Length: 106
Image 1 (cartoon, rainbow, N blue to C red):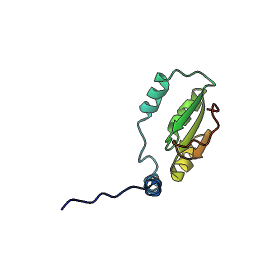
Image 2 (cartoon, rainbow, N blue to C red):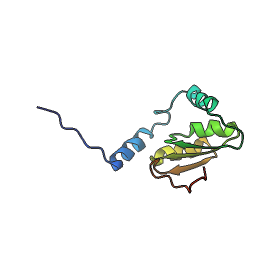
Image 3 (cartoon, rainbow, N blue to C red):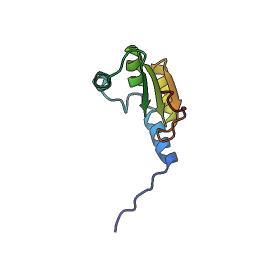
């Protein structure tokens, strides 16, 4: 008998991420990953950076420390709450597929 697959809905995905973020650090990458991204991206002080699926906001935090204007967006409300605790940057609950920003603002 073939196993049936569960079709994930947006709501079930958001609920699962919110659940996983109840334990801070559970989905966190190594700090060196965030530093590597900022080393590779040609950015200068005052530049703007958008972190889609920002999780706990660590890339936003590191970017701000380098003088960038960083904004994070995550679909999980719990992740956004953690990100707001980690950084003074702008953190938004939303979807990367439907950014809640006007064109050319970030």
